[in-house]
Amino acid sequence: MPLLSVDNVSIAFGAEALLDQASFQIDPGERVCLIGRNGTGKTTLLRLLAAEIQPDSGEIWRQPGLRLATLSQELPADTTATVFEVVAGGLEGLGALLAEYHEAATALVHDAAPERLRRVERLQHELEAREGWRWQQRTEAILSRLRLPADTPLAELSGGWRRRVLLGRALVSEPDLLLLDEPTNHLDLDTIQWLEEELLQFRGGLLFITHDRALLQRLATRLLELDRGVLTSWPGDYAQFQEKKAALLEIETRHNAKFDKVLAQEEVWIRQGIKARRTRNEGRVRALLALRDERRQRREQLGKASFELEQSEASGRLVIEAQDVRYAWRDTPLIRDFSVRIMRGDRVGLIGPNGSGKTTLLQLLLGRLTPDSGTVRLGTRLELAYFDQLRERLDPERSVLDNLAEGRETLEINGQRRHVISYLGDFLFSAQRARSPVKSLSGGERNRLLLARLFSQPANLLVMDEPTNDLDLETLELLEELLLEYSGTLLLVSHDRAFLDSVVT
Image (cartoon, rainbow, N blue to C red; front, side, top):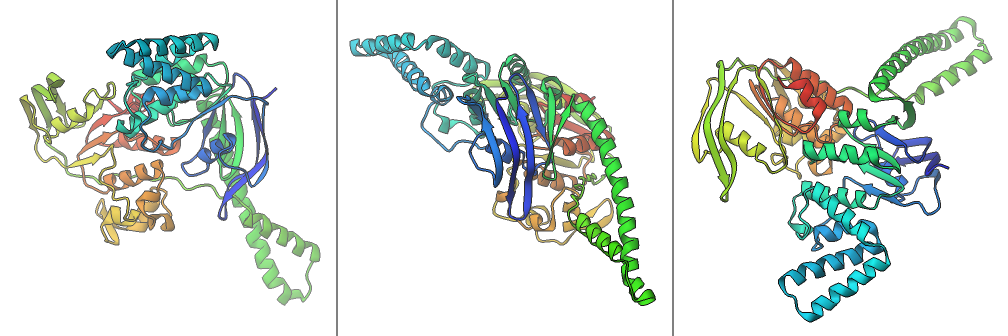
């Protein structure tokens, strides 16, 4: 029996159909990856399955008693609840008991008053009666593996750490069906590899969205592709999907070209036939009307992103030289005795756990921070473009256009004038979207805007701090190709294993 089935489900926002009569099911033990462009409706589909929103038509059936857990892209609002309370909350009623026991046991360490001891003993008996110790151990194991501070209020954590907390909440209950939206965002490599093993051992059904191709390739037993409102199931792995999809699009392109030629010929006939014969073949007229209707209903292939770096003159041969660099933050050593020489054309990847100082090291290497000891020497003729992980340079109240061009109508890219709307079209922004405020953009759209800003600057030193978060697979692969062709020097922080393997030297 399937865990969940979707029958002819449709949903639209405005005139745009995100799902058009979609049907599929998820069985126990399946690991299904949902793929598609940013903005095509993948997150909407997950919200439908989780019953957070309702479809316009069609039916979603869930197995009676189905235990479902989700990880959404939405971060929780500031709250005074501790990390332990939020994660244990994934266990529903038992979670409140576990959180109360954790709080009482922690307080007992600081004050062993008799009434506190009696409270802990009472809670222990309740846990034993409800077989709660297994879930206590499960909760603590999840907190440990995600390196989460159990007693810290959620309000004190950054967005990335809050997202880790939500991931822990989704995983802790071992549900029948797990829905994960970009689970690797804000995770370091070690944690991603742990998550991968955790999900491989998961016995329930899994539907996940990811841009991490290594995770996708290892986990997915099949793919669901959402393309122009149509949901298609593809058996096999991602590499097989790419081959089959390319062949299908080529067939579709040839068919559309042949169709358009026939339609154009019939339009000429309908206009000229009356003058020549004063009569018309009514069957042919009906066929033309059917052709027109089919053309109106055609789902056009989505445009492709087209990135081009603004080239700069070559830098000097030596780009950066660091010797015996040390740096501490609030008496905590982050960098110790670090030395490196980076030459023109090097593509260097920086990896390490979250909080280990990767962004700080970038700032030291670029001369934006002064080391406590040691030296950093920058080469000559350097022109820097910096992809900003925290998106600090985007003004959320201003439009996409204004954030990019500061009121100008044109940009100069590689010696040629480009209209700003046309240039943004290369990054998949329609004219209407280009005039929207940045605060209305999705995470993937914000990253594409950052890339548009980055690539409009002449640069022979490119610094990218987590550029792959929220990018769809197609855009990610195009970025990868561009960086492989880039002749300047690249400093890259990323947790995307396939991206690192392909790009860095």
